Image (cartoon, rainbow, N blue to C red; front, side, top):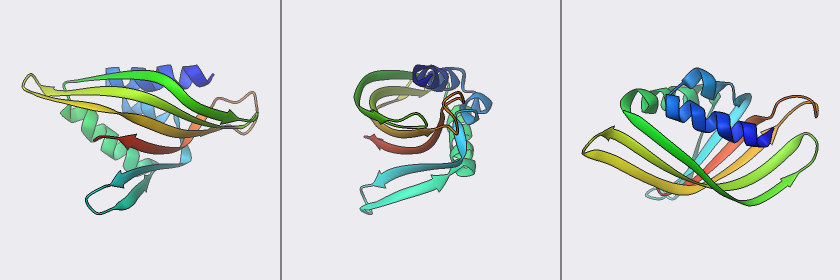
Length: 128
């Protein structure tokens, strides 16, 4: 289910498990964020996303991800576009704690209506 995707996403962060996280991402996955200093959008694919996330998971002592309200959604039987707020607390050590707040703008896809949802695109609209 769609809610199952969000629960698995949250679990992968709390357990810092890139294998679990990787199960959520389609092979053609794209991550996009805005570099406000250079005023450009930066993007990368699934492999770089998993490397980057692995680095975060290894560096952080604790990750607390909270999914907030769904801002908008549009769907058909095999594609879903969902915008949902989140808060992420990244604890690197007891005196280095980052608070991230924002919106995850996600596109999920599945080949058939009986297949599990996979994330094919994530536009991160956060303060980090």
